[in-house]
Length: 260
Image (cartoon, rainbow, N blue to C red; front, side, top):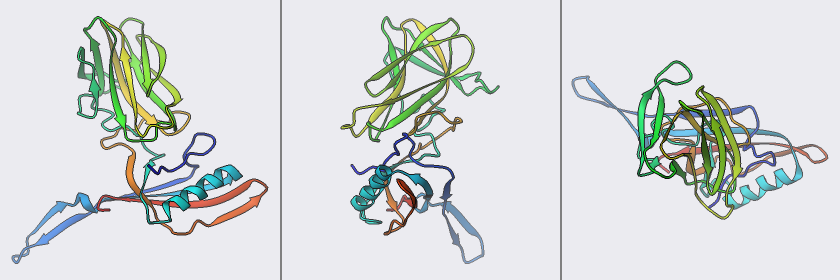
């Protein structure tokens, strides 16, 4: 699986990031002048422009090696959107992309930390710990930041899960955003993220987010998530400017089209 590389810092890009999302509508005009408009999902495209400066020799080498492996615009690759939440349906924990444990109930309509009712209550009725997870078809060895707002009526411990990694966290009766940065098995082509709830306890959660970087940014609610399979480079040539010793600049353009 060819994947777009991260920088030495664990970030996938630098600021500014330019992202364009374009939709297409099919219009059928009848003989009487009336028209029917339908959304065309196959015409949907997303484009990114990633501008890099002060790259080290090693970071530039990784980009050049990736560019050669992709053979410019020829081969597709997995791209993790640096401007999005990688999780799908981050605000709908009863969607099919989420896998809850057999004794874990998931209920929506709970008051959230921003005054709405978009939080979820996870209730474990079993005698053992239960989790809820989502698996992404993304490189497990990347640096990921997993974050969530959590609270519990009674102070309790919960566990954040990234692949085979576990991080215990203490949750109070007040909303608090918790995050954890971790890398999984570098040989695996998929990785799971989730929360584990202790036996006979409940946990309120909101704003679950996964990002391909070392720290959390503002929460972004999702439907499809930010993992793009079969993205493509938009250029056949990588133009590099060397500004000093061990300092390089370049711009990478990436496109993802549903019809490719």
